[in-house]
Figure 1 (cartoon, helix red, strand yellow):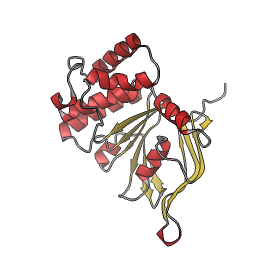
Figure 2 (cartoon, helix red, strand yellow; figure 1 turned 120 degrees about the vertical axis):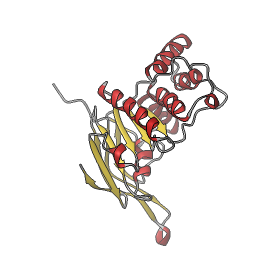
Figure 3 (cartoon, rainbow, N blue to C red; figure 1 turned 180 degrees about the horizontal axis):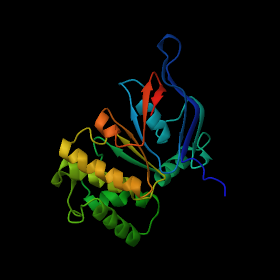
Figure 4 (cartoon, helix red, strand yellow; figure 1 turned 180 degrees about the vertical axis):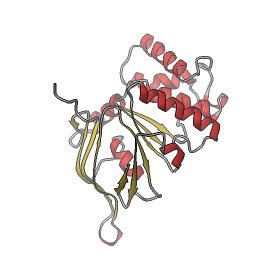
Length: 228
């Protein structure tokens, strides 16, 4: 039986801003394979290229050169609309600042990606309730973000990120705005999601957070300096 394709593969990818004396090579000839079931942590100083690489993996930015394959599909020639559809279908995002819509309830925030995926209303509600129960917020369905703690808001964001059953969950400093106790709660959820088969990649400055992953990629000058 043939092996399944890599979830994501970057082949000699570079991202360049400016030109001549003002040229900045944010990502430099980066090659990376993310296999199904991986749990990767990405570390590096500010300006090392880790966030740019994450944006490319998340189809939020296009590389200047090189190839990116997501679930066996080359994304280079996709239109912006097709790229947005692929992003909604195959990727989940968790950010440091949650990015919840203030006027929507927790339930409505989690339902939102399914609206773009044309999931019927009854199924949207059922799946959103299950996702919020999955992260321990079954009693907070109708609360708006300003009625939730920071940790609860991040759990809503995680429920929203996994609602379309993404091939890859990308988390950019997901515990950066949380205290140590809430950080542990969020990381436990990530551990559980990984044990259930979700492929995870997170950017972090915190060594104890990175240690939860299977592999740690350390970026420097737009490339992976070490991996372990």
